[in-house]
Length: 395
Image (cartoon, rainbow, N blue to C red):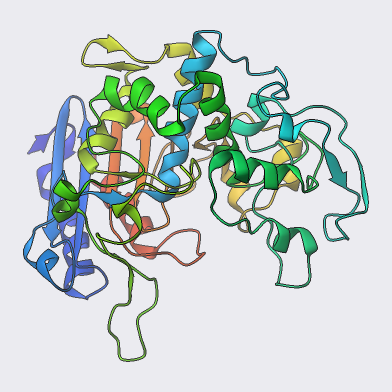
């Protein structure tokens, strides 16, 4: 028997996978959403927390979670709405709106002293920010061994102040030279705020959350919704085997942040993120209304890195052998696993969330956890999730 292009019998393996995570004590609750051919299949098990009131509230589509780096695709979509109305252009310098990033210097040696620099060969553009090739980002280095890695560990601050601190540092590479993770999305948030004349969060609400009905997505959670927010846990347990709380509902996200972080600051729900993912899969349309042009979606979700950029850019070993980067999303270039087809796109979040769209299979799939991955490219359960999803396809 099939439903929405899935084998009903084989779909039980998705639920079995989630239940094993709960029964083993890895997470208190887990949820998966699979949307295909107009049908939506939801599996939810467990609760919002191991302890307290959350232990009595079941996981559901409206459970609020930290989506972390799954913020990045939303930021890129918002930026593209500004390109569409000609407020921004992909290849114009950002100097006018972000003068802190004009006339940048670039390190002669990425591992060398911060004062050994040369002028940037050209200005930074919005395309550079969205493709993560503007010259700065996450740099891996042991503390004290790589000056720029230590300097780029910038504290959260209001976006204007944060951009000023970034602009006072040299770039690690010339604009357009290499892909570096994370920071491009944060800077894009500041650019959006200045281009629209409103806060970054207000711009997201006006251009993405409102049109898509994403009522529970934002940079903080109001008091009347905290009972729907899941507790987040660290990757490793305490020596006693007890899960260690990383963030509780009434902690980090219970008040508006100092910085509205486009790199990973949003909370959302499976219901809200399904609306976003489904709109992209439909070419930018949500419930009959166009939110983003089909051309923008195609640009966002196709590889935007050259072979040379992929060859010299590091993330984790082998990543760019089968994957590239579009505008704010990872793009699968070669199918080497039982998982997303070539041409699929999406991203993961630090606390175990994951989302990909697969146009070839007419599929949007999301998994929700709240357990940190501690620097590993993916939790093992994420890999098993994609195996479970794709083995269940039946049409």
